Length: 539
Image 1 (tube, rainbow, N blue to C red):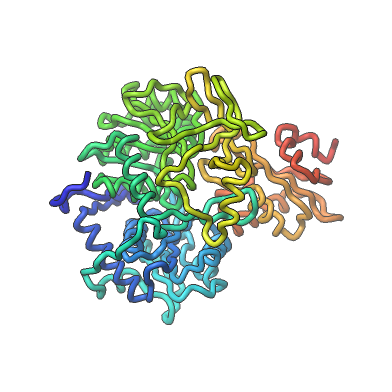
Image 2: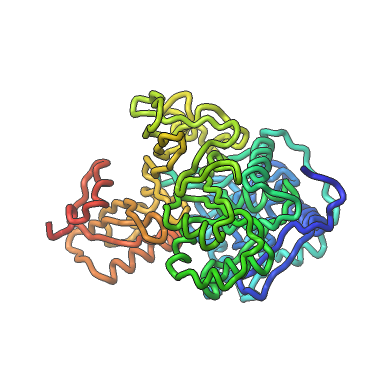
């Protein structure tokens, strides 16, 4: 629980892209930065209810900007820093943001010069609602600067007032919009509100991770996704926790980076995705065991189901067989964790999301919408009763909210996931039951990727499905029919991948492209992932 008089306690440890770069912010320092930037936002004409788009990598200014928006009642919309200019444009226009916050360029592992400002410029050129752009100087690289529109973060902060009283908010006032992929091509603006979301993230963070005062908590997610919102920023900071932000990647400068960070900052609680674990497990145990990891007492996973091999490696090698694993299941829409073991209390089963969190009532429904009683059981995973952190609507489209989550099974929240409940009542997530892929813990709609592929001038039609991927869990398998008279080639395949990166971002690049003379025009097209020869031009 919050106590006064802890302004000197550490709030954020920021670990930069380079192992030699880090910063620490106390709660007093963080509050001072948030107040100043809140006044910068006001100077830009931002008021309660206005939307602000934040397009930053994992720099401290990202958290400061989010909290400053919350302080004055502005609604932030964070866009993942790997999204393209086109994806950024679509999200800005959908939420009608008035202001964009970005940075000059970015580092990402051994990559430098990632064109954040250039992407922002390209996006806002087609965003009539944007009236200003605030730019963080991260790398010092030269960027185009519109003196009539753009403002440097550091210059605006230098002249901003120190005091900014918080806006009075109703519990149901919007806090943020975060876009997630749907089964149609247009991403959904998931809207979370102030009271319920903050209560739920605070409570789940404290209980699920068994947080105690002084623990160093490291969630290795990106704040551009819901895990970072809930369990890097809002949940931990609501609990006066020490939360660690990580700008880099787990393989830079080598495969021991996570474990080096854990030793360097004496991390107690570590939360990451199975995709990262699979990639690191493949490189062998030495990268782990050369680091102490002696401060660890709890491990967590998020974003996708974890398979037994990486679960056992995580438990036995990373945790030395002494750290419980909380394998959590939840969604952007749910705001916080819905299923999880309770550390030290719930018997663990490798790969199972185990049991519902307090107050959550999961049910399994059959095709007719009837609850499947008894164990074992298999079917559609739905939630029977509401909880504080649930999303309130799809921004600007409440009908889509109702259709997506409540029409199929009236009276239940439809998660879009299938599940198995075993003989002990434990839940096992079996994957999506809609046209949404889970790529390295990131959700992508098949229609969204198909639409991007279709932007290539040689493509007549495309169908995208998921397939089992050794590292990412699911990979993207694209079937492509070319225009009449066009023959498949390596250059066309490269061009298609480039178009997807341009329209969505690198994380949406197809892993495999198969050219086919024609594609089936019904939902059975999804079956072809398991039988590529069925649409092979030779068959």
